[in-house]
Length: 99
Image (cartoon, rainbow, N blue to C red):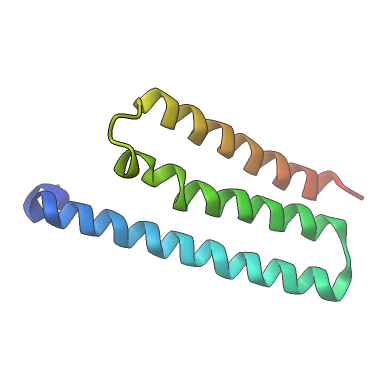
């Protein structure tokens, strides 16, 4: 609804803004988890950091692939997005079950 009223240019800038906020938040969480790992040396925190790295890569790279390569199939982008989501969840799972 809001995107329709802003028009195409407004929706693109809004989308870029949201992606930048999400990427910034993921970067902050990555720095916090690496700092915590430096203090505790817990392998759980390395898995959490890995999850944030993969998520950050997804937001910065995969979400912008269609802008960088317009001829790229959306199926490829969806496959990459799904694969990185799986890896992110796997890292979080390993952080939880790791003793």
